[in-house]
Amino acid sequence: MAFVSFVSLCLYGTVPAVELHQDLRNAVRDLCRAFPDSYWRQLDAARAYPDAFVKALTVAGYLAALIPEEYGGSGLGVIEASIILEEINRSGGNAGACHAQMYTMGTLLRHGSAAQKRAFLPKIATGELRLQAFGVTEPTTGSDTTQLKTTATRHGDTYVVRGQKVWISRAEHSDLLLLVVRTTPVEQVHKRTEGLSILLIDLREAVGHGLTIRPIRTMMNHATTELFFDDLQVPVETLVGEEGKGFRYLLDGLNAERILIAAECVGDGRWFIERATRYANERVVFNRPIGQNQGVQFPIARAHVNVEAADLMRLKAAAMFDRGEPCGSEANMAKLLAADASWEAANVAVQTHGGFGFAEDYDIERKFRETRLYQVAPISTNLILAYVAEHVLGLPRSY
Image 1 (spheres, helix red, strand yellow):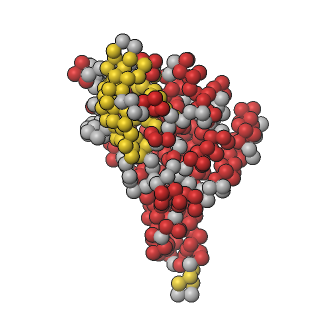
Image 2 (cartoon, rainbow, N blue to C red):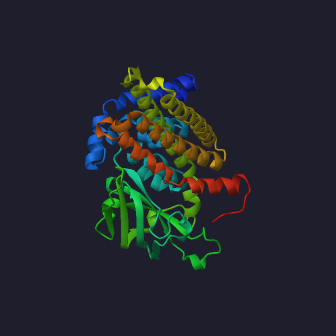
Image 3 (cartoon, rainbow, N blue to C red):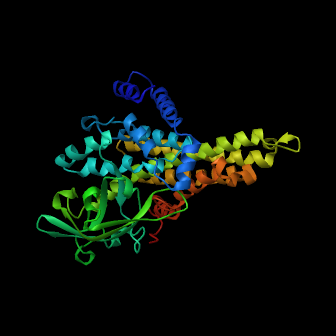
C-alpha cells in the first residue's frame, strides 16, 4: 500500500489500526528493498551519508509523518513514526541517518512562533530543508546539560554565539540546527535549569561565518561532528519560544526521542534474530544444523523473548505519548529495555555465525557496531536507571 493511501485510511478510520500498521510496515519494507545490504555496506566502508535513501524516504512522505497536515505532513502519531524507523532497521538499514528529523521538529512545532512554523515546517515536510541536527552535548559537561558553556549574548537584534558542541550528528547533512545555549549566566539564575534557550540556526549561512564543523570518525557510520562557535551572529528571530525556557523545551521532546530510538533497537534486534535463526538452520557441522543444538538455539530464543518484551514497552510508551499522557518513565524504560535487547541479540548473532560474524560481507559486524551506540546515546543506560530509581521508586537523587 502506498504511504499516501495509508495516511488517508488513518485519517478517515476505515480500517482497523492493526491492519493499517501492517500496511505501513509492508510499505516501508518495499521501499527498503531498493537499498539492500550492499548499499549500506558500501556506505559504511566509505563513512558516507545515505543521501539517496534519505531522499527516497522524504519523497515517500515518511520523514513528515509527525508534521501536521496543515504544514504539509501526514499528522500521524509516534506509534506510526516508530514503526517506520523500526522497519528501516529491521530491513538492515540505519534509521540513525535521519531519525532526528522525527523528534527535533517537535520542538519547533510545539514552541516555535506561528511565523517560524509557516516558514520552516512545510519545507521540512517536502525535503526542501533538512532539520537533522540538534546541538546539546559539550566536551566538558556531557549529560549535565544545565552546566553547558555555549552562550548566546544579545546585542540589539542579534545574538552572538560562542562555545563548542560535540557528538552532534548529521550537521554536515542538515540545513537547520536546533542549538541549546545559555542566554543568562548560571550564577544569575535561581535554578540551574533556568536561563537556557533554543535557537534555530540556518547552517547554510552560519558555516564559515562564525561556525566551523569538524567531522569525528567513530566506530560506526554516524556522520558525527563537533561544532565551534566563534562569535557567530544570528538574528533574534532564531529564538524558539521564550528566552530562558529552553531546558523545558528540551525535556518536552525527549520522550519522543526515547520511544523512537527504542523502536530502532527493536528493529535491530529482530534483524539479528532473523539472521541468526537463518544461519543456524543452514549451517551444518557434524552432519546436523547447528540450530539443532540447544547451546545455539537457547540464546537465540532468549534474545527473541527479550526483544518482544521490549517492544511491548515501546508500544505502551508510544500510545501514552499519542494520548498526551505523561510517559517519561515508560519512554525511558522502553529505551533501556530495547537497547539491552538489541545488544543481546547482536552478541547472539555474532556467536551463532562464529568467524563469519566478523566478516563484512555478512553485515553482522556492521549492525553490531551500530546497535552498540544505544547503550550510550542518546542517554546511557545508567542514567535511565538513575531516573527510574529517583522518579519511579522514590530513592534519593544520585547526581
